[in-house]
Length: 471
Image (cartoon, rainbow, N blue to C red; front, side, top):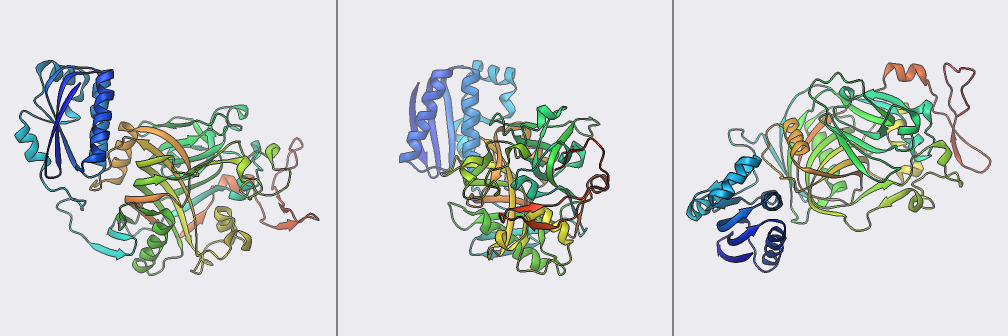
């Protein structure tokens, strides 16, 4: 293909000539990338007056460019489409995926308008707080008192103790917003080896298969009555609605570490809720400048327990058990995140110590002088458009799940850098477990040290059948 370009302000117009198919699409991608290295622009117009052929490969490239530009706050437009190209657009249903104008002047008028990240028009800012990390615009959604439902215990994951008896099957409708470790499958031989990090966002499940090393997802239909179960060895699920919707913009163009974001969110929550107890659930639509994640390389089953008796994330075991991103594997991408944060500087005595320990495995060795503790699992998307002004959090999550390319589910490291985020927070007032779970596994949380100083846990089961094996 042949290219020509002209720049007006922050708007770059590229005139194309030739066939926009497989080879041409790659040439266009290379040209835009090279131009971006030498010429700063925010919005992009493609003048397609000289394009006489358009294929699916070309359409995918146009869609990729559109998402790249709009995710950074710019605008993307097409103009001067020949009849054949317009017919292809209509045949494939892409005519509504782009802003298409008849003339370059109309496209320039659209793309040249000022674009800012702001709250939706018609909804005044209720509150704004500035910190050294960035700005937080937030609005109250409800004053309810949500709970966190806990199934299983984190210590069983960290010490690789999972077996069939410690797996709990939960229906999709019970896991609207959640994080944990589990898999799908009907038979133990199907799901046990596959157990890995999972999360649900507005009912969509994302998980990483520790056996195959691949990530997958499932989007259930609305009001589904399916009997398919999420087989989980440990899970935290939000019960109730969110309390606040927060829009965050980083003060650093490279974003701020996720841990810093959690720290500010805890401070903001404490300032807004008089009786904040110290636990905050966060579901996020985040635009990350760089992502660092990690995934299990094998399922945390009792037969895989480390020979040295230490946890799988102990420095002596971590390289064997985890594939961690030393450098960011994903940049400038959209992530859906489920997370929980605890403010260790607050009095957490209002929570059940037993249930709190199931979430964070809190002990002097794991705290180590920390002010906060967090868990975050993420679903990462390629070429997803980030809309900072989205009004409905649930619908925006569903839009991303349905329209963007999902590439990975993982545990999210706190060194991940967040540039923008829409954050739905819930003040966790109550911790609870499913009644059936506690009836089946009534546990004491008595910890004992054996003669080798290896941390062990004693389980006390209410009902023990003759064929049950000792855990």
